[in-house]
Picture 1 (cartoon, rainbow, N blue to C red):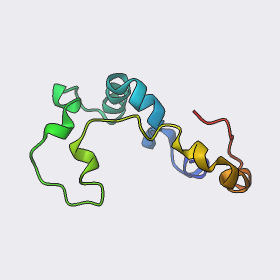
Picture 2 (picture 1 turned 135 degrees about the vertical axis):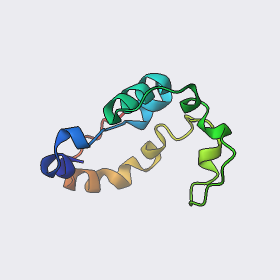
Picture 3 (picture 1 turned 45 degrees about the vertical axis):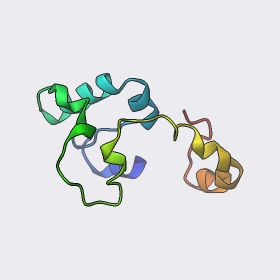
Picture 4 (picture 1 turned 180 degrees about the horizontal axis):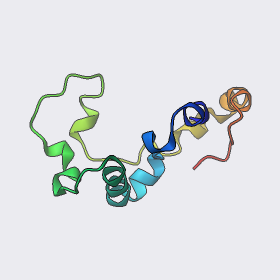
Length: 95
């Protein structure tokens, strides 16, 4: 994201940390909607109840509420990710 922030104006990029979304979905969603200039709708919290079809690889995920089971899962692979994260100049102390 450092690259994109360096070449695209900040008012075009909205960063979301998945851990923040899981912990505080309504607040993060309100901030996102404000950023893109859309009003709040209660359906934003119940997006997974939408009956429209989804034809993407994540079609099963979008039909369920935000879940926290993936938070911290990367730590299982931390020892393998170290060199990559160092090369990308990333902090190993992620959420």
